[in-house]
Length: 380
Ligand code: SF4
Ligand code: SF4
Image (cartoon, rainbow, N blue to C red; front, side, top):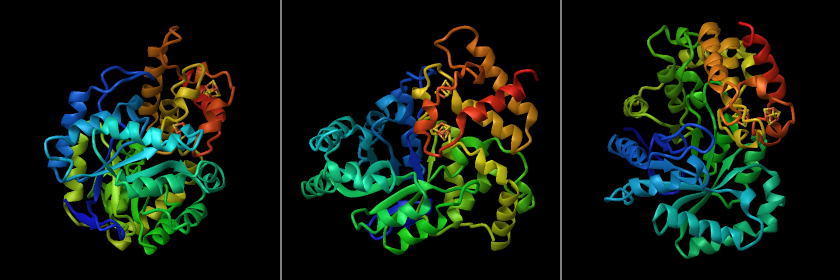
């Protein structure tokens, strides 16, 4: 495993981080709960492979991810693994909520401190909104003085320029942001953060799972010597402005494959990077269609439409030209839904209320995309 200095924090962390948002689940659907034993086993497989940075959040896996991570860190792992979790700022409604939620997280994680405590998914507006209103920086400083958190960090969903504003507050030790070969919008802002001594973590190195399915479109750029998932992870690892590529891993195969890639320090050549960038430009339509699979929209939908699954089918069809694979995935979803309103639905369930679009960090025109998917796949 490669290890890199985590900005100026004094930590040295693995180039591959374990994102604990897709841990194995026992029951599918919106109220899924993790199979804790399987999740602990999977996390420890990663630790044993050399991963020493794990990232969770208050709401991952229906609130169970922190419990799974806490259990995985028993038996001596807590001293060897850097622990990151996130405060859901939208749940902070008064000054005392910071402390209440933090204490709940420490209890779930069953630890006495969190190494990197992130404000979850913030943008510039948070500075003049909840951060100021609920004295978040002051509460974080107190928690730091008491040793409950060691560093304050932020995960980021906003225009890249806004990241610089957040960095310049001087309050944060690290940043977690989207960066992969489909989306490099944060590259310059992350370089700025790195230049200011912040640790930098890239989320979604394999495009929220989409690149695991991609066809040969990017493989041609490296003469077919790497598969697309391998190429995607190597692309992120090749950018030294990022200290760590955080991958949400849900199976032993994913852990093993990613760990093998992160073992070797074999960055892509400048020629390969240039060829990839050329292809990305050609795939400009992908940007409009970009869905990270974060699933923030899922609980908002009153009709239980599986929006990320529908959009993935659309991306597979339109961008990678995997027409049959896309149709098959969509059909599986539509068939499974049947007439049962409790089962996740395909795009035909959408009543165009727009609630999903209000929470989408990528600001996607979801209703328009769903209508497009329905038109493409319904009759095919
Ligand atoms: S617009 Fe459609 S998909 Fe979005 S929340 Fe409403 S019903 Fe669900
Ligand atoms: S549509 Fe938006 S909120 Fe929903 S999964 Fe995709 S990126 Fe996330």
